Length: 202
Image (cartoon, rainbow, N blue to C red; front, side, top):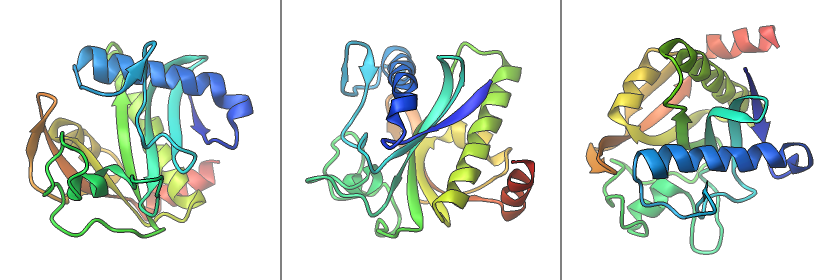
């Protein structure tokens, strides 16, 4: 089991893995959770999959076990910025405009985490290992890209799992129903001690 950072700059090496991640996202979000998301030929994608986003995926060979996407809150592509800000502006009908309890930031040191998932068919032990890889991925990205904090929108259940890990998580807006789940926006920060221990282990 390993984790790989995917950017549009390293597609020559990671393009096949990126495709498998979109395929895994399709299985997780569209097939299993019945979310109404853009997809084609078994690949899930949306307007935020641009060169401004960075991806972390956990995999064994080409088999993707989990992953997430991070997007700077300064992102801008035509009429879209990032998911939480666009929801606040009323541009995403599936999400409430009061999703955040404050104005959506546009700050180079704050990034949005989205499409966070762990393969459902794994054992509890393996899911724990995958979450550990993903959490360390957030820590590495925070260091590499000088990110002070993250915003995310996820299910309340997933947020409880994050609280058991090395992530500091606090609510950033009211709870609401989406895709049959109770969801909420959150502030995420990576513990500085965890960042140092990851750097020492590298």
